[in-house]
Amino acid sequence: MAGGGGGFVEAEAIIARIETKSTKIESLLKQYKPVEALKTALEGSPPKTLDERCKSANWIVVHRALMAIKDIEGMLNALDVEYYDILMKYLYRGLSTGDRPTCDQCLKIHEKLTERAGLGCILRCLSDTLNTV
Amino acid sequence: MAVVDVHRFAESITCHAWSPDLSMVAFCPNNNEVHIYKSSSQDQWERLHVLEKHDQIVSGIDWSSNSNKIVTVSHDRNSYVWSLEGGEWVPTLVILRLNRAALCVQWSPKENKFAVGSGAKTVCICYYEQENNWWVSKLIRKRHESSVTSVAWHPNNILLATTCTDGKCRVFSTFIKGVDTKDPKAGSPAESKFGEQILQLDLSYSWAFGVKWSPSGNTLAYVGHSSMIYFVDDVGPSPLAQSVAFRDLPLRDVLFISEKMVIGVGYDSNPMVFAADDTGIWSFIRYIGEKKAASSGASYSSQFSEAFTKFYGQSKATTANEASESSKSRGGVHDNCINSIVPLSKAGSPKVMRFSTSGLDGKIAIWDLENMQEELGHQFY
Image (cartoon, each protein chain N blue to C red):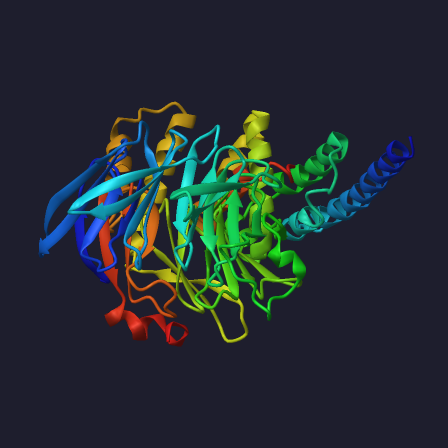
């Protein structure tokens, strides 16, 4: 009972954090800074929880930032190397939605990201079944 | 390039091992036999023996350098120790007491024991009992949650590192009363209990393969199936672990060629060199045979253009040829996954100058690093 209660509070805390992230991202996008927005969205991902709602909430935020990106090369130049693996995981989540505009965008970014990060990045995304997004 | 000799022995090679004088090689051509070939002159190999006792594929072979014995393990859950008597190899069955396949084997540095990793989540440590004239198997049953893919002996003949498909690397003590002598300088009393787990490394989220100790026994290296290689310095109560992610396809096996340099082989069919710099940070240095950047870029884009055209429903006729060609022109010695790398030097020597690799393409390649010493840098000295 106590464990369940603790888990519930944790999820609420994570969702609250995601909401603050979301407002920050909206403001960055209004200032035409999509790269900054994506960086903010990817920070703290994946949420260290098994709760699907948290993961979905985080995905919505990342998706918003991803779709706003127009200059993919520039974005990848500005992104640190440690974010490549987590970005790749979100790209696959995007591709799994089947939604045409999302998939188009994700495919475009996927091609450029693979050129930079190599097949190892894809491997790490596929083989990590613990920290899913 | 560093390749000295390449020879295609069979359709596919599972594992191989060299004789003490490095003139003969024993390998399993992906069936239940072990073939022993001797090299007479440059690229002339003749088959001397065929060891046929196992019923299923032979998954591990090791050839001891001092006692000249071959140990083979197979998916048929058995192991044989072969001795050369009067020009013929005579097998002795070792009852491992396994109910699943044996996957890997290695002689201990003193060659009085050997370790077998199995799909039964156990490791068998076998030693020779003089009174009964047979090999006895002691099982480490605890701890492993899945198949044990690889085993490696520490130079002190007691510690054994194992990697498992549950992603963890563990170090056990295999002290056996009557076979091993207790070292008065030895660390904790835990080290003298058979099957006691000394250390468990939780670095990988995916299957772990190919564990090896450095020549001094201070450092461990093993690979994960997520294109990562893990280095652990100062193995003991407070180890220093590093995870190195690299660009390309995962590795299957590693080899320490000096205290600070490791060669990894795997699905890229090209050995990779990793080294630790002066501060102790490990990183990827280069491929052994330089892969031309142009060809690697071309192979990626042709594979992906095929995927993209599939996505948009266009015809694949033109791109299919590109994809198959690019996979062959990977510009290297091996055409397919390299699954084994074996040193061609005395066990326990601090530096390895020559090594051999075998893979799914059926080739065994011998590499010599004599001319590459400057290119590899001072970590190789």
